[in-house]
Length: 246
Ligand SMILES: C[S@@+](CC[C@H](N)C(=O)[O-])C[C@H]1O[C@@H](n2cnc3c(N)ncnc32)[C@H](O)[C@@H]1O
Image (cartoon, rainbow, N blue to C red; front, side):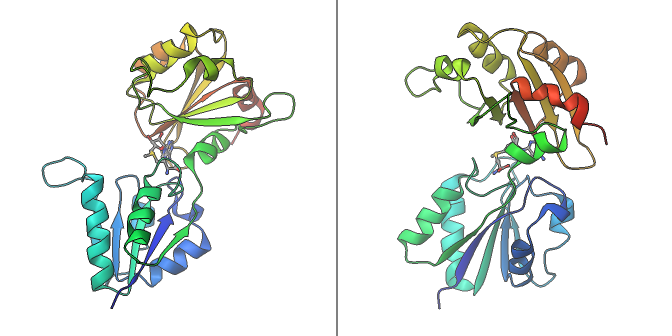
């Protein structure tokens, strides 16, 4: 018997932002593999009988290598009827869900994606920042902030990014906040460009820090900003003043 694997997006944190389809699939799960970003509220919905595997951290405190997760998914699909791989946000937005789906599909294992609400859009929205807005931004670009901006050919094109008129959303950017801000400034982005950092967006722990490209690094240090957080760069951040009231 070969089972089916569902790649499920769990949304940005709070359980009520899980889709109905995700809830239905979770109910049927025989085995669930989940990441560090899947919140307690969502984990509380896992069915009691399912085998639960936390691939966020191993006993030695390092995350599982992707190849090992891929292997585990294949093995579980040969043991169980319904295997659910739960990932934060949307599985195909910087979640390596594409690689997992490809591995399974290439081995002839049926895989179905259940899209989730991505933090790239939901965390700014929750903080009162629409990522597009007529007159402010007609485009939104989502990048990883994890890359070393100085690493050359394989790095992101910061000259192009700095020249964008639209909104820039940076995921995984807290560790290298200073490098990313410097790369934008060095490539001509104005120091007074508005920036917001949304930590734990949509959850009870949501916290928002607003500044500019010139001030955000200092503000983030002062306030001890931590991952998971989304960095939003662009004029849309100004809308928080009106739309951020809760
Ligand atoms: C590996 S990426 C996965 C993104 C995910 N697939 C998505 O669509 O939201 C992890 C990054 O997502 C962002 N993130 C995830 N959940 C978040 C939240 N609730 N608030 C702010 N940022 C979040 C952070 O930038 C974090 O470093």
